[in-house]
Amino acid sequence: MKKLLILGSGCGGTMIAAKMRKLLAEKEWDITIIDRDPMHHYQPGWLFVPFGIYTPGDCVKPKAEFIPKGVNFVLDTITNIDPKNKVVTTKEGKYDYDWIVIGTGCRVVPEEVEGMMDDWRGDIHDFYTPDGAAALMPKMHEFTKGKLILNIAETPYKCPVAPLEFLYMADDFFKKRGVRDNIEIELVTPLTGAFTKSVANRILGGLCKEKGINIVPNFVLDSVDTKNKALVDVMGEEINYDLLVSIPPNFGQQVLEDSGIGDAMCFVPTDNHTLKAEEHENMYVIGDATNVPTSKAGSVAHFECDIISENLFAEINGNAPHHMFDGHSNCFIVTSLEKASLIDFNYETEPLPGKFPLPGVGPFDLLGDTRMNYYGKQMFRWVYYNLMLKGHELPFEPNMYMAGKIDVRKNK
Image (tube, rainbow, N blue to C red; front, side, top):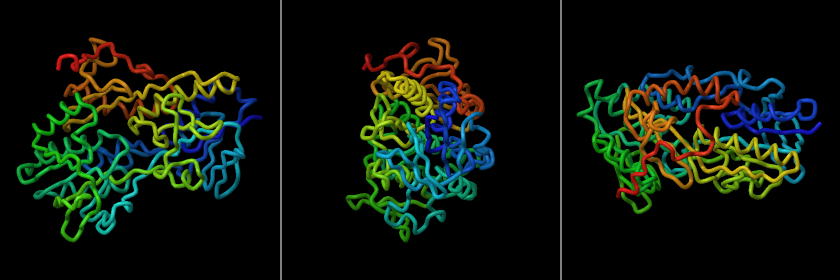
């Protein structure tokens, strides 16, 4: 019996298990997932918790509900990965493998920023964790006057549009409570603007300007002075806050660096196109655990899953991994409590206006600001649980296409 081992049963690991169980004969292949957490987190949902739209309970379900039939689920903590001998050690045992897929995700590490932990969950909060989102909710409801800053400590970080979504929703949230005129909202970011791609940056940055959200670009955070409630950059510049919503540094899992397969930020060096680990045989990497230069988001893991399952199956059958990932990512971007935008891009093509997924028809507007896009964002939770995690095909291609997009770059 040959063995496929999958580390992590988040979005990426669960989808890979579903795909590979369909491709590999059960009498010939044993598939095992190892994860330390029994609950599956719908991470896009944490954004809505501080505004009272979702509760923490709306965003978690038992992982056992999504483990495919014929796949072993081991609830344990991984302590070492030995790619040379093809053995994974956990607190409770050891597991050998023929092939392995790393899907261990990433984590926030606020302790990497000097001073941040001095007032963590006081006047400094995050919404990238379930506890953080829940703790921020009463703070948002109590906040009636002062300066709210959302700071991105460094890149990369999960879901690059989530900070903008939070700010857009905060603007609408405070307006509906009648206190927006008393509150300054500011994005302090190491990026050169609201977003990394020029067309999207112009549109999303323009939306910030319309909403009175100030953007402070090129701010490289060095420390937090909690006594004086100030962010301090590497040049000594200070920006004061009353309530700080932080996107702390994001790292991969420590066990990856400890095992010698992760870089200094605990991400696995991964081929941008085949999604194989660059330095280790018989190893693929999916989702947030990779270092590929695209978004750390569920949609990326979904598109990567198609490539990995095809390449892994090809290699198992003695062929070269010839399916190529193009860096495809798409995401609904909430722009208020009632509307949203949508972006679709890859390594080579930035987000552009147009219709999605049907060219000229939609029903969703790329880089538009519509109620239909908002409905798509809210509908995605059902799609995630009922289609994505079960390995079903979604109504769009794994490789991005230009049909339906308007290349406004040509009109500059």
